[in-house]
Length: 89
Image (cartoon, rainbow, N blue to C red; front, side, top):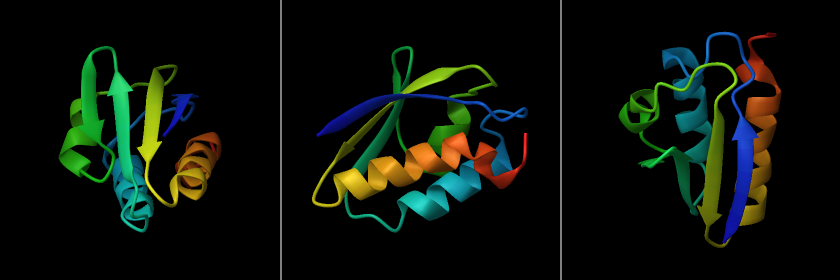
């Protein structure tokens, strides 16, 4: 199992478009991928779960990934966050 802290750096936070990109990415991995904010844990393959986090810019989330492709999945999710979900800011 891999655990990482990742920060929401994009200006609009985890809004619908960013959440959709995250779900599309995570759906391609067989590992179980979770995001945890405060005491709320959600499946990163569920757009409704992600939106319920209401994560704004500056929010730190804990990413947990468990499975056969966990390293690739964790790296891909971290890269998506670091790239501002392709939004440029």
